[in-house]
Image 1 (tube, rainbow, N blue to C red):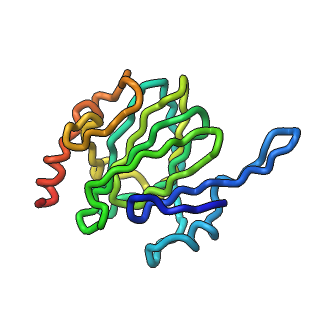
Image 2: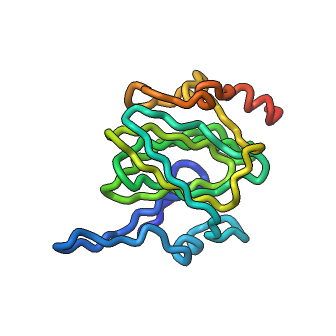
Length: 185
């Protein structure tokens, strides 16, 4: 498994190396020992407590979501289809605060994103159907949810396809400016 850094501080991309033969392929999508060896966060290890999966249709956007308080770390991968995945660093003391980066996740290369606490996350399905799997490091607490509008003009996220559907919650998300004000910035 290759583990690479990204333009955003502390975000990692995990790319497995599948074994292919006449039957198809086999790949290890996660290895805690290899993962822990690459983390630059003292005292943190690959301790995940919940797995979830979403299914979205072409053009659907889910996001931009985050968690207040201690935040949550997650591993995100597209098990079927393809998505345009976007992260925004919302850690005020981070060298990449306010920056965003997009990633192509699909069922061909099996890449997984490690998203540390303190990021907004969202994606758009770019295939007919896309199944996204999430593994998070602590139980979900709805009281800590942060939602920024997927179409916030200050973030200006470049979704690659026309947006077809968003949830009522995502459509009513706060603005980037409101988040900055909440942080006292």
